Length: 240
Image (cartoon, rainbow, N blue to C red; front, side, top):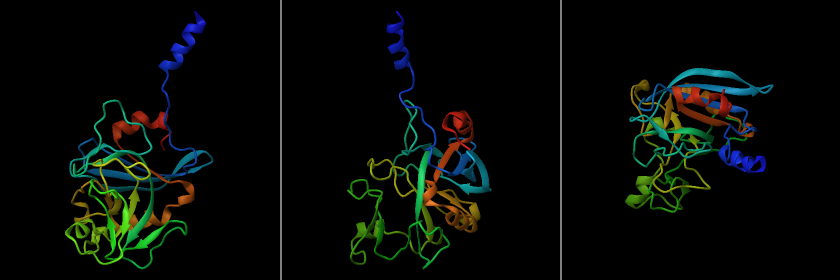
């Protein structure tokens, strides 16, 4: 009887319990009041002596106009969860790697290992789900000439997009068409009075501080969840 019960008990256990990557020692957290909230409270933590210690925050930020929805990242999706779609005006919730910065400035304050590119008119970020380059940075060998190229062009004449850092939702190597693209931390609009299409935005000085703090060697991650969901998963996922 015991031999019969053991396999059944094993099958009843979760196939793979999730927690933050063991090698991640930097974590940015974003908590919203609920799934339909477009405001977020941001904090930054570092792991010291095996414990998370807050080093920055709280900072106020803005999220998607329609709130949050589960995104595609490191975390498992709850059974039957609705997932982000292109153009839904929601920020992806979950756990995501972060890193890689783009902007109009010749130089920014950053960790030596953090990639930074000063964008030119030839820099595109593809948001067309039908393209094989969907949700990827693309550099073309001439200035954009077609309507499609101009539509994918990284925004250089829109100051809130003049500095940004990538949030790896639906990112390579596994990208799902129409599951959402071009999710970044960037500068907020109207002094924080305006929501986003899905990005996380904040005051420029705070964004610059965040980018300067990020150390790729510490495998930084972004945890974005409604507050109740964060508290429910805090222990199991080993969140700060």
